[in-house]
Length: 223
Image (cartoon, rainbow, N blue to C red; front, side, top):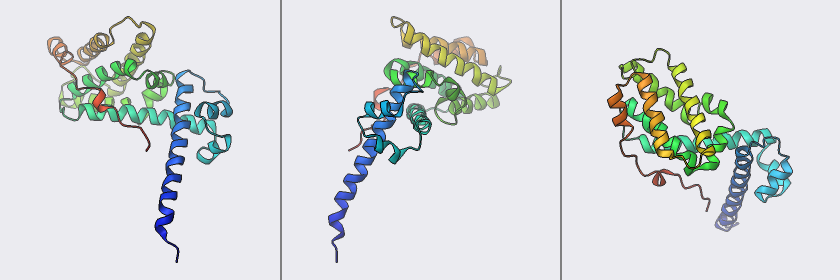
C-alpha cells in the first residue's frame, strides 16, 4: 500500500508553483493594464511574468480573461483595504469620507493599483467590487437616515463621487508636487457638503486622523 504522506509534500509544492505562476501572470497583466496596454501580445505578458507560454493556457483561456481577472484582483484589493479601515465606523458620512480620503492616498501609496483603476474608469464606476458598491451603500444609508439630505438620487451621487475619484487620481499622478492627503481631504469635504452635510461638520469629519494605511494592506505573498 502506497504511503500517502509521500505524495502530500509533492502535491503541496505543485499547488504552490501553480499559485505562483498564476500570481505572476496576474501581476504582469496589472502592469500592462496600468500602462493602458490592453492589446499586448500574450507572449509579451508571459515574458514579463517570466513564465512559459504553455503555462498561460493552464490558467487562462484568453488574454481578455486574464485582464478581467487582473482588474477584479485590483478591485478586490481596494475593497479589502477599505473594509479593514472603516470597520469601526457606523456613521455613513464618516464611512464615505474615510473611504474617499484613503482612496486618494492610495493613488500615491499604491501607484500601479491606482493606474489599473484609472485606465479602467468605467469598470471602477460600475463594478460590483471595489469602491463603487461600498460608496453606493454609504450614500444610500446616508440618504435614508437624512445624513445626506441633499441626495435625491444615490446613483447620480455615486456618479459624481466616482468622477471625483478618477479625476483626483489623474491630478495626483500628473502633479507630483501636490499634497495628496490635503487634496483628498478637501475633495471629500466638498462631496460631503454637496450631499447635505453642514460645512463645519464636513470639515471636522475630513480632518479626523486616519488609521495606519500600511497595517491594512493585505499580505499578497505566496509561500
